[in-house]
Image (cartoon, rainbow, N blue to C red):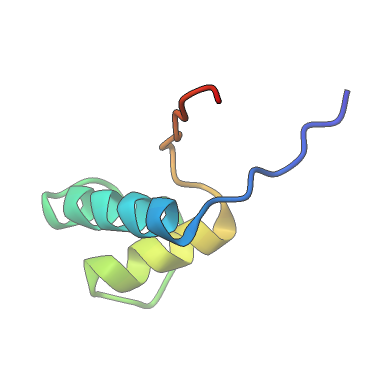
Length: 61
């Protein structure tokens, strides 16, 4: 079975990126090769690459 990529809402994206930026600011290792220095910019780049190890749990409707 093929796993399709999950589509996140803009609020979920913002939460994932902000949580990852906080992790980076606190000293977490960077998961991609980048020239960027700012944690938020690195987190955005990691999000676009799909390497952030954070999942979203949604309530069943």
